[in-house]
Image (tube, rainbow, N blue to C red; front, side, top):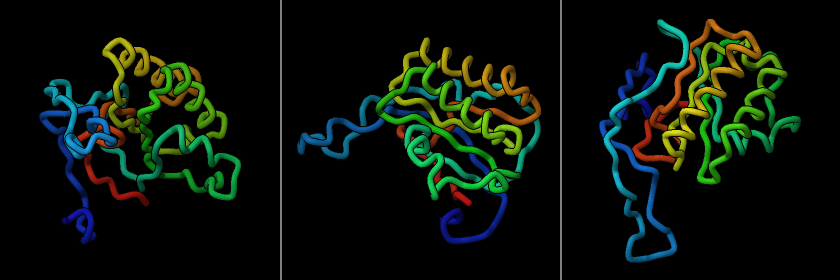
Length: 172
């Protein structure tokens, strides 16, 4: 309620104790609205790099959907990115870690990674532990090694996106 209907800052978030990859098959009326198996969220959020507090306005969404609006009238101009915190997450389409790396490189080529105050990834839906490790390795490699952005926080496995439960993150 406080996040949706007031301007009291800052918002303090903590990881949920349990997580799930979402809901059972929506076409089955008998299980409509039921979640798949819950797991302990033992590791919480993972900080790939960065320390301290980064502040900025949140902007982002599903990395696959954002690919569809690049170079359109809906894509923000170069000045927009200053002091933003970039939120990205994957969908049930489960792009390969290499594909996420290709998409993330585009943010680097556009000089977005050098302007934002941080990059936060939601928990990757339906990825195995091995796939998550590969994804995290690629995310850090693209941001830190390829584009030399080593002074911002990069956090993965946050509770937003296509998994449950979700934090409410006020964009803008």
